[in-house]
Each structure stands twice: as structure tokens, then as C-alpha cells.
Amino acid sequence: MAVTGTGTGTGTASGQPGTANPADRAPRRLIASDRVIGTDVRRSDGTRVGRIERLMLDKVSGRVAYAVMSFGGFLGLGEDFYTLPWSVLRFEPQQDAYVVDISEEQLRAAPARTPEGTDPAADGAWEEQIHRYYDAAPYWGI
Image (cartoon, rainbow, N blue to C red; front, side, top):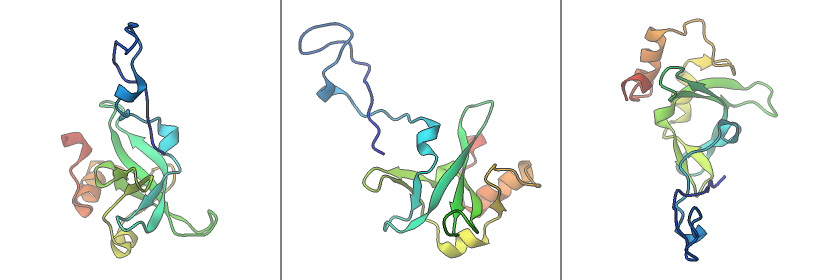
């Protein structure tokens, strides 16, 4: 899922304004949310942990707050869903996946969520708890 895009350069080797030499363009850092959904989540050793099912966005800031990840099960049956603070994930181009440094035991002990990201305790106290659980910086304080 390597993402490349058009740069913001205004000149080319041919001197035509508004177009840039493709070799001079830096890869884009932005990605459409529908390209993130379904992406594998792996450990740094390449072991598959799960896949991203949904992103939860802060409506006011526009920041990604959480990724809802499926874990376990077989062919979509018996899966559990876990909310990971976005700050615990990092994209690793060589693996074409988001990488987490979370053990299976730590993940299994985390509060499960639905694929929709809803939770009966979805409130500020729960959000603080989940960020403390993963030792992650809260999205609202970044």
C-alpha cells in the first residue's frame, strides 16, 4: 500500500509552469481512510496481529483518535474488536502494514469494542483509561 502522490512543485525540467518532474516529487503523507480500512496490523517482527476495521475521528480537530482493529477469529467469525489509540500505531512501508509493539496478552486483556467503535462506557473516563492502558499520549492533548 505504498502511497505516492503529486508534489507541490511548480517547475519542470522542460520549464513548463505548474508541472513537476516525477523524480523530484516526495511521497505523499496523506492517505484516504478507505485505503486504511482492511490494512494489516503487525508486530515489528512481521507477525500479523489483526486488521484495521474502522477509524474513529475527533469531529472538532479532525484528528484520528483510534483505530478499531479486528483480532482473532477465522474468516470473520469469532473476531473480537479492540480500540487502539492511533498514536500506538506506526506505518511500516516495508511491511505494508501498521505496526504495534503490543503483546498478545496485553491485547487480550484490553477492553473489547464493537466494529462500530461504540462502547457502553464511551466517555472521557473510558478514553483516559484506554490511553493509560496503552501508555499512549491522548489525541486531545497532542
